[in-house]
Image 1 (cartoon, helix red, strand yellow):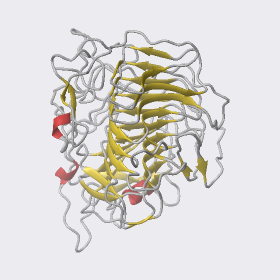
Image 2 (cartoon, one colour):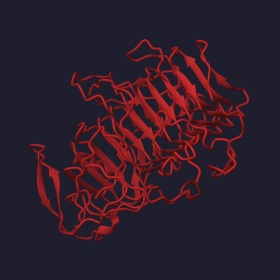
Image 3 (spheres, one colour):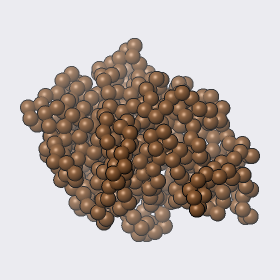
Image 4 (cartoon, helix red, strand yellow):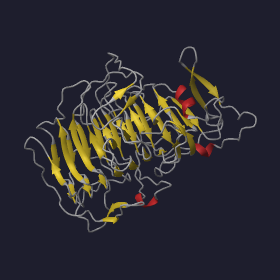
Length: 493
């Protein structure tokens, strides 16, 4: 059985399908090569997150489905032997690991559906690195399997069938084989980035891109990069789960200024590790971000959950962000540090965003709630909720900028040692239940790999709010309702 967790988002909005074009995120504006073209097709008004936890290794004789080149319909394809000269692919390459142990019965459907309630926390993550950020658990939960399956391995071939025993070699080839209700299983290894995905799932048939080992599928700049992104997704109802995006070694061509850019609707960017994006580029208003969720192509209501983001942008550059949101959605359980400007930055058409249980530090600004340079609205950024975040040791703490409304709320945050200011709110707004003392992390450092989990003496313990929070933390352990929800990405154990 594939292991997942599902939760329903807080807002109900209407989506338009997205077109294909190149986009640049900026701190205070955006530009693109192509003009946005919106479809009038309506979509359902909820979004859900889904997390793969465990699956049995595929059978050597299992069937998978491939879209027909002429009709796009699925046809059964018998698993094929590897092409001559290609290394044999072992079935264990596609066993799901690093997300926790649990039932490994293959692909049993359950009663949980898209938009269903989060009834139980998933298992904890255990990742290759940095190990100090992670801790074990034994919780698990299931959600429906998909109809179609595509497999990718460093030992595969793009002329193969894309099955478990004859996988594709590249992410780009796999993208051509996806359709609604497809899971793409990506085995551990190194893959060239510059990927663009445009196929949409549906409300009842999402597309899941899954690194079978959490952070095991590593995406790096190609030999000659033709774009400034590691992954550009324009499809709707798409989940990108568990990838390691490493921009530290640029080669020829365009340098990356964007890690995962998302222009679709009802998407999920979850449990990825993204670092060293836009580090060695000129600081220009073209900007950049590790994760960008954008409204430029009419994208709405996507979620950024449980990602590790660090070392983003050249020092002193105000145009490069960590997690950048310019539409509606949520930002929850993320760990973000050493970002040139905003660790979490809302701008353009951002509104109705829930920002909860993130830990952000050593960036220029911790959290920016703003609106301006609008694409399709006149603003303001309103009805945004900022709850239970740790914002510590940045130049500035939580800042409202541009056009903001009177219904934004700031509750139960730990905001401390941000020397320019801890809070700058507009329209007479105030913050409540704020903790104003050091978070007492297990191993805080401004350089290297910090351990931003909480010591037993932390004032963040039990001081968070369950409102808008997930029932699990960054490590996907349950948030303990006996001692109360903790502030920040980590629940103390």
